[in-house]
Length: 294
Image 1: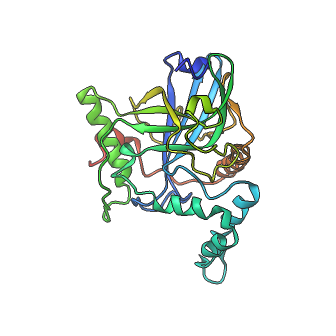
Image 2: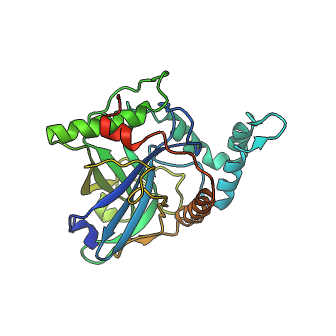
Image 3: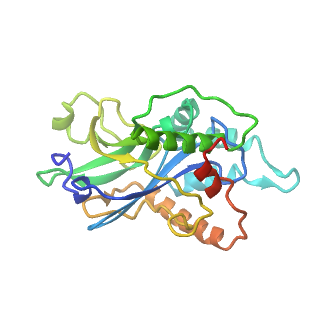
């Protein structure tokens, strides 16, 4: 790994605080296989904190702030019907043809059985430096050690995805084989001598564009899950944000506008949620301690 990045974070073992979540933002939506799955990480090192949030699709249907605004408007509630306009998203795709491929890729992503066998992607590019000090653009993905299973729909249990997570973490503790994901660094094809000149150049400033399958991939480290906490607890799971512009020494922002946009949106959302009278999370401390199926 040190051939491809001089960042100290890839040379040490360090604690990680992570969060599993599902989209959309409504916390009372029942778990479904097709919901967006997310893994967010907060990694503390002597040289700074690294925060990252990843989803289970390799691209997102937005390339700049205007795209994002137009996309978010498709979820706006019509006061007359109490629902979003079903024609809004199809109209968005028609009026944003440059995002068609991203919508198609995101829609075609097949869900796995649950949160534990999902690959999570960082859709935006960041800058690292190789051993010689040469700048390179990279994306990240988290690849599970767990075998990939077929999705199931537990219609009678709206929290089944998180209960499965609890059960598998506890099973891993008993078997002394914790759940784990490899953090993989994908190096953009902007350096032909690394890639062999066999693939087209990757777009490093556009999170809506998928990168080449032939890109060089390097294992940067492994994240293991040792313990779970509920949002209802004080301390570790107090309200928090995962800001993609918070980076340690050795990792820098690229000219992709999406991380900066997400940073602003996340902070605005964080402060709004902090002022709400929130109901307790359905994933409780008691559920975690007794097992997901209890």
